[in-house]
Image (cartoon, rainbow, N blue to C red; front, side, top):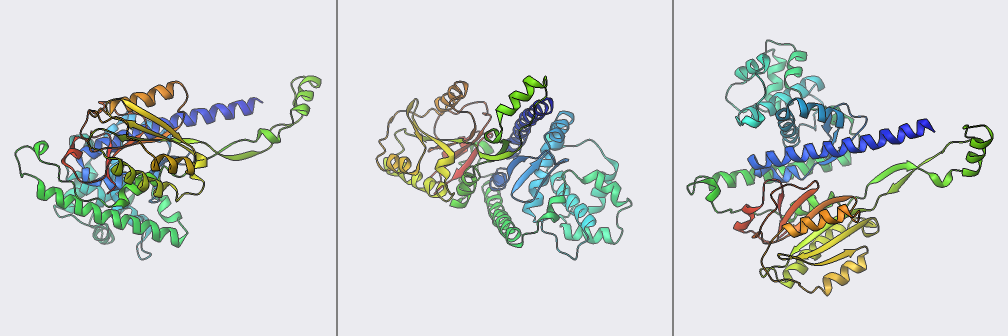
Length: 431
């Protein structure tokens, strides 16, 4: 019994630490987004997952696996290192470093990839990414020079002994994440699919960055410039929403297979000695929540809202039994929460979207929705919120503080008002 109690306590502690770890990653992502808005597609493409077996942090291109203990210790000792490390990992994905060709030796390739992304980050010269002075890093940067070198080029320099340090010394100076998952993937179909995904994100990111460069300096003061957001395909919104359409499986005690009669008999007859212990564990699908808020101010028509709901339904319905495993809150709000609908089946969703009646038509204030969610959390009505998605034209009053859950403001078409979205939230385009 004591072992079971200890196991439960350990599990609860890990769950709390995992939550803190996710908050750390979200904070880092939001801070990075304010400096690198063109990486929005990349930021939305890694799903956080705490792993008790992980020694540090790493990715295989789909999930960002992390050790909560590692993440918290690093963040407390040097938050800039973790912010920089997050960007370090994203650049590995964008430059396809995860997909090593056989002709490259693993250890040398890993080092070349770390040096390549660190060289890119170093050139940004951002104070909140700056690390303490390091002799080996600085000397290697001098040797690399001012040109942007690929991992393949740096690999060649390592092969020819261009650096006056051992591979172990340079690995310690440049590494942040574990690369073990890069070589553990064995399914060629999954590897090819993940690679295609990051090739698309790289292409989109390059276009997005070039568009921002063309716009830069057009008007005095970057913040005064009209936000001509590059056209983002449905892929971006779909990718963001799909990560929340996967019900989570958890392991817990199978109490149904546990015979309490024999257990009680042993405790009574043998004085605190149970005859049996719980034998099995089972996988259960936890009911999780998703909040979708609809801006019902004067600028959003019934047809526009229905178009958004159809797009969203098309994404969610791709997942088998989604509506039996998830609870979706549909909120209409202008400057007040006008209507709340809780959707638990496909039929309810279809009926709601087909016969929707727009409630509101006043001014836009996003804060009441966030207050509603907080109230429901305090009442334990909302227990496991995964994300809040707000469909809007963007012109309204935003909350000052970032909530504990993922938040995205979704636009059906390009608008200058997209620039009003705070840095802690994602801007997605569903048109």
